[in-house]
Every structure is written in structure tokens, then in C-alpha cells.
Length: 83
Length: 147
Image (cartoon, rainbow over all chains, first blue to last red; front, top):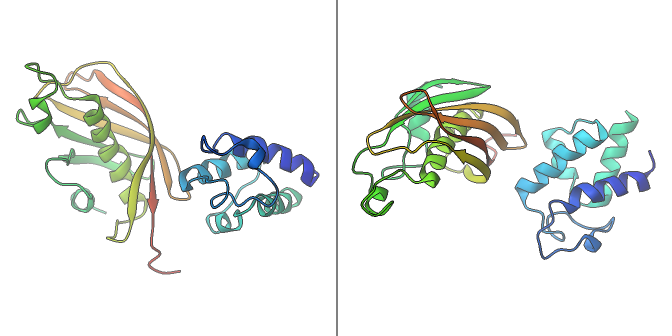
């Protein structure tokens, strides 16, 4: 799976949890999920659970910290898929 | 943990503690009871001259027994540094609960991941009729005691 394809799917997952004052267009590969996209900690967990389902992968508790930016999330997802 | 220890660790007290007893707690769910006293403070205003337990209080009772008590069991004890919060709920109501009624709350864990506990919770009255049921999620922010 290409990182572009992962990005498209991840973007669709993230947009559901954006606060009302953050537009979908704000999502870029560099976006920090909490600090820039203002996703709260409860919704970050929802993002992770949706990512697990969408990509059929399992993310461990300590790996949550690695999911800080969109690009780092893509990296982690790609690693998991390739394993 | 013993049931009484779990109740003692709940971060609530009168007039906002809605747990009398825990009957069962496992990794998969919790069951407990609460009797709404005739003189609970909210009956003074809900409704005027017609006291009925507010839905938000029933939801709170379900959350305290079904989610918070279960959560305390799952993390094996709440510390003073741990912070908990309600994340979301969707509850449907079917029967009124009047002053003096005893209710039983039964929860089933859907998942506990990354500190978020999501449960299916229902409340029964003494006639075993479903008073309300729905989905409630809470979150715990834990200050790590050790790595």
C-alpha cells in the first residue's frame, strides 16, 4: 500500500473527529493531530481504533505517542502493514 | 479488589454518589445497585410537585456503577493523581424512576483501550423492567506510578 493511499484513508478517518472550527483542508502530512488539528485525547483514541479496523493492524499502548503527526501515523501504519 | 474497596475509591460523595453496592465485577463488566432516597435534592425541582428522577441522574448512576467502578477494577485501583472524565453517552429511557425506588445497573465492556472505557449499560427497576439503556464511555488520564 502506498503512503498516498494510506494518507487518503487516514484523512477520511481524521476528518470525522475534527473540531467544528478546523476544516478538512487543514489536514496535511505535517499536521500535528493534537496541537494543530485540535483533536482531543478521547478522539485520538477513536482515530487509533478506526485506523486499526481500516488497516487491519494492531497498535499497542506505547505506540500511541508515535502517532503525533499525520506523517508519523502513516509511517507507523506502513510498518505495521508490511509486518 | 474487593467490591467495598472499589466503592471507597470512587471520586464522588453525597449528594452525588449513586452507588450503594456492587454485586459483581469482572474484566468484562460490572453490576451494582442504588436506591434513590425520597429526599434526594433534585426531587425538589424535578418536576414541580411531581418528583421523578432526572434522566441525567439515571445516566450518572449508570456511569458510576457501570463504567467508573468497572474502570477502577480494570486498572486495579484509582490513585489521587488519576483523572477521570466522561467522554460520551447515548442513553434511551423507557420507565420513570420514582423516589424510594431501587435500581440495578449492569454493564458490559465493549473495550478498554488507551485509557478509554466504552460500555453497554442498562438499568433495571425492581420489577426487572429496563428503565434505560445505552452506551457510555469514560477516559482515565493516569500519572504513571512506574514505567
